[in-house]
Image (cartoon, rainbow, N blue to C red; front, side, top):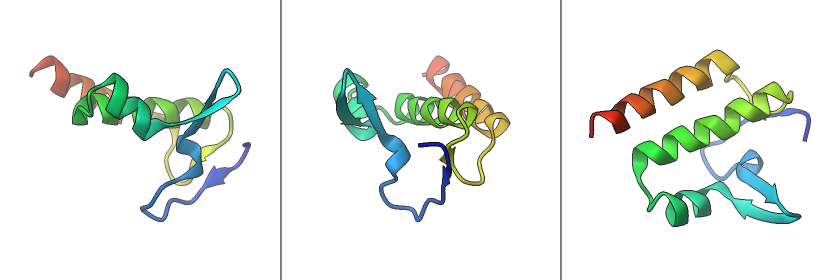
Amino acid sequence: MNKKVKSDGGSSSYYTLTVNNINIETEDIIRDVFDNDFDFGNAFKSLVRAFLNTQGSGKEGNDLAYELNKIRYSINKIDRS
């Protein structure tokens, strides 16, 4: 995928990750790895979008600076928990 995807608020294709040739949904990783924790989930989703942004794809309207700021915000909330 090398183009930005306009989000409609529902499930987005950029949240489907391929690991060892298996498609995995980001929401499954958040639920199973991070025990559905909101702040860890937000940081992870932003990290996915930040990486995709560096590849020329990801969420339309979000740039790398936005995603990195959102990651910092989520991490700071985790640190204060």
